[in-house]
Length: 441
Image 1 (cartoon, rainbow, N blue to C red):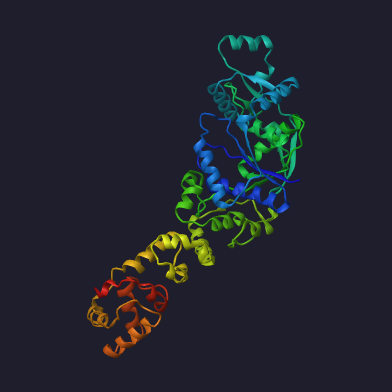
Image 2 (image 1 turned 135 degrees about the vertical axis):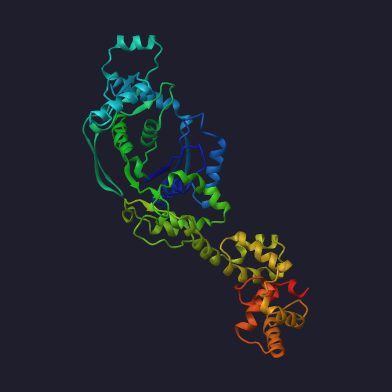
């Protein structure tokens, strides 16, 4: 069975970059009838917070992304300790004592000598007596994984055949001096124990993948199929990472972006397929293939979500928005007509408030100076409400007969006076919804 996972750290609100990873893994599982795991990488107890876990689940539920089971790394600490002991016994995990300052000096020295800044395994060569002496000095040990110095090869689902020379990579730190298990180790143990078969994540994890392949094999597991998607940039190719906090899913939701719009974009962005609005996750899963994606940085512009949201809103049936519309004060008998008119003239559902205000309370008239006399003559000819679909046709005919105006010179000043706008829906449809016309008062 295909098993995928989304493994966020609950240290903040998830953003579009996180969603892209979650969605790709979800669609792979959905398409194959497999399992999708939500795994909370919460080993950092100081930064992980329940409020972020709750918000994460709310965001996924709003998008319709359901998980088959939930796992928490904070509940698996004993398992990590068990695997750590196995690696120590196998000589694959060794204790180190260099401070961050000492490591930084080593890296700078290597760079000055024209060498790659790879950890030199000084601690690996320490005797037990030397380690004991360092501990007696108050130094706390942390643990690195001993990489086999060979070329690590795999076929990436997006990038194709990849290989990394382990000699060009530092032995990764798996356990901090505080005892905290780090992502590289906990994730490897989890992926092995949980039978994860496919992992899609950002291209910045390629080096992690190389080391995790060896870690998973060392603990007796089988490495999953890896794929690394491109990283998002701003619309002009600028780095997006600094702005991701402003592109959280909850902020996009509050701005009125539709879930279908966001999912449709994230499922196709960076692929050879055009971004097209899909109204369900099943539709997205049917056409989802990793082979369609490329490695080039992918431009993301949140403004592109608005046209998709607009199209989605135009597809919504009245039943989907009835409660919201009636909540704005629109009479029940006018609700469906109101939606028919407003749905073609909004970007987000929040825009319905403006149209409800226009219909119920009227608009500040927009009258050009050269049209003041004309509007003043036209308004008394507007019959008392309630208006019907014939009101606009009959009124403009009466105004034309009285003033001699016709065409745009007739219709536009009257539209602006009634609605406060120089564009909008068919006035014959809008007039029956108007409870008040301020220009007449």
